[in-house]
Structures are given as C-alpha cells and as structure tokens.
Amino acid sequence: MSQQETDGRIGVDDEGFVVDTEDCEAREAAYRERGTSRPITVVGNPVLHKECKDVTEFDDELAKLIDDMFASQKTAEGVGLAANQIGVDLKVFVYDCPDDDGKRHTGVVCNPVLEELAPEARVLDDSNEGCLSVPTAYASLARPDYAVVRGQDAKGNPIRVRGTGYFARCLQHETDHLYGYLYIDRLSKRDRKDALRQMEEGTPRYETVPNA
Image (cartoon, rainbow, N blue to C red; front, side, top):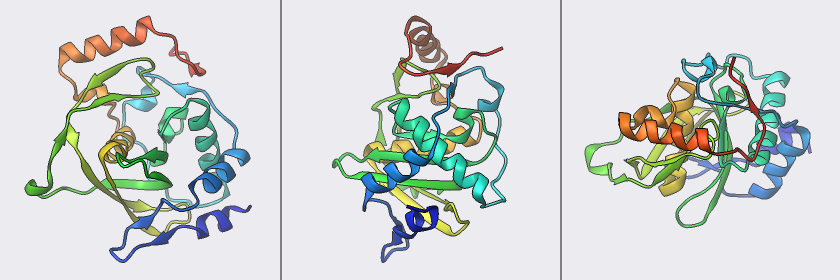
C-alpha cells in the first residue's frame, strides 16, 4: 500500500476533526512494515530539551521518517512517539493509542499546537504517566482529560485531532516533547528525582541511545 493510499483513508467528521479510529490496524501495519526501527533517545540527550524545528517539506523524506517512527514505536511498545525521541529535530509525532473507552486512535500530526481549553472544559486527571525517553519510570501527573491539537498531516493538509482520557494525555505528552518538555519537567522536584531513580534502577525493554 502506498503512502498516498494510506493517507487517503483518513477522513474528517462533521465537526472538522480527523477520523483516526477507522482501519487502525491496517494503517499502522502499512507504516510500520515500510519503516525501520530506531533506538530511543533518553532524558539528557540535547535533542529532547529544546523546541524542534517546524516541518516545512512534506516529501518522501518525511514519509520515510513517519514509517520509521511507527516501526520504532511498535518495537518499544509505546502508544505515541515524537521525532526527537529517535533523534530527529522536527515537529512531528505519531500515535497508536486507545482512549478510556478502549477505542483505538492511529495517526500523524506535524507542527502540533495544543488548543487552550475553556475553564469549564478543564477536568484534571491525575493518572500515572510514563515515557519511552524515561524508561521504566512512572509518576502521577495531573492533565486535562480532554485535549485538542491542531497541525498538519503527512501531506501538509491542516488537521485537528481531539482525544479524551488516556488518548488526551498522549496528545498533550507528545506535543510537549516537540517543544522541549518531558513529562518529568512538569513534576515537583521530589517526584522528578524519584522518576529518575526509577529509570536508573530499571532496564528498558528496547534499545536506547547512550548519552555522551
């Protein structure tokens, strides 16, 4: 299946949000099978701690990066992956993530911007959060249980993606990555130290890039 055919499966609902819940298994497999898994960068690597560059070229090179990101995400058993997590300084993330109702969402967002929620729409969820770039560590982090991200798809078309529950957390987490923030940067000093201790004591299940 070609990249164009894969992208063509994504539609838009009546409210202008991308329909990312259809043909998830086939779309994810198509990306992944074309891609090559890469090792994951971890906290301390400079590419994770700065804002990434905007995507300006929606070309075959970007398509190949997206394929590799889906392959890398699958290898690491993640539900979302930002480009800088495989060492690439570009604002793009992929996801293959369920929401709290068990509905699977699969897609790509380039140049994401998290939309500000109205105060009445902000209901905080303080569930545990983890990160492939902070392997084996988890911490409770309060985030809104609803999120809307606007950006572009792999062809440069404008899109909006919305999520609830766990998927909302994923959208916020991955957008944070592309602006230089890890989830541990939003923790108290004590909780951040504890997460780094968990990481130091654990052994990741996937290949990582050693920090210089």
